[in-house]
Image (cartoon, rainbow, N blue to C red):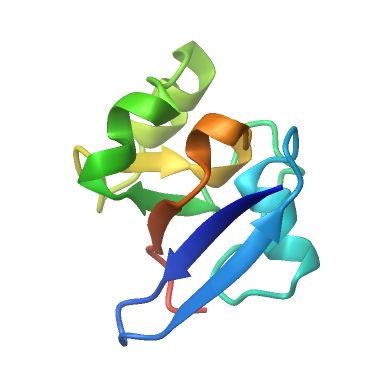
Length: 105
């Protein structure tokens, strides 16, 4: 298990213990966290799980693959820290990860 913090623009935050091997999207969705819809089921086709990865964690999260990059390119509010939560798989190296949910939920 790894601890992941999901922050919101209103200042609230939710800490989740996420099973290693699970995606951020699945963990957030099944916990009922607002702002993570995952309409496409986690195949990087919709962008409804857009998060901003905290600067300290960007390298550990890796870089987007071609499919994720294509979807991110279509997001108007994209930032350098933008990622799709469905494409980040939790591992022990991500224990303590902090992301900000872009949608208000």
